[in-house]
Length: 124
Image (cartoon, rainbow, N blue to C red; front, side, top):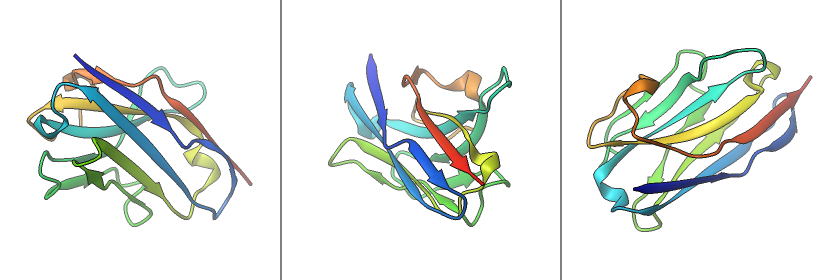
């Protein structure tokens, strides 16, 4: 089992920045590719935001966040981050981190473990 705990959400004005953290415990963090997803108000699905490979050498981003968000990871701290800059009201959502054994993937159905989510609200 892998336990994931997100933190860092909150209320921010449009154009501002937030950094989300996802701390992992349980099985070795270095074995897992990590992803961030978000669920906007009124949506049933969790949308892909960003993902990073086990080594950190490969990343992928949703088109809507490219150039604004980054997903660094610190394997020594068992933590993955989501640095969000130039935030927009449409970024308002509950943000979830997820872990996938070995492979960088963008489909939520392929992730093995999920955190409880953290709310991000961007005011206009």
